[in-house]
Length: 192
Image (cartoon, rainbow, N blue to C red; front, side, top):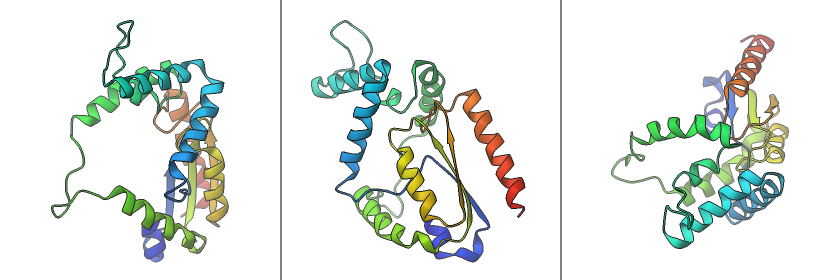
């Protein structure tokens, strides 16, 4: 979106997934916590994932008192349910073998500084005229549907599609098929 804002003549279309307008740097944690609490009430599985992650973090251990392995709790947090986590976690583990982000010009990205910059730049997003498809998980805890809707209302030439039973990283086969169907349909509608 930042590239399209800066170089509008270089971008014919965008497909955005798992993104939304960001909250102010002060509101990021609050927004995520509210979403997490809502999801805890809706899903016993997710509630246990949060308890496991909290226990793991608080006690600096990857083992629960009953001997269960808690090491996957942070990855499960991003998933819709146990079934989707079993598909996503092996993929994420393979991706993580590549290592963390590498320094650019000897410096690591400064997340808070980048977030603040992005927050200020998104105030200009109404200027983006690029045709845009926004795909978002209906059960996304990190990029809540209402914030994806805000992004959709901000981008004048956008179409928003929610994928049911999906979160940011937990697109199962049915969800992937739905996402690609929507992408194909959108590409035919806009006729570049």
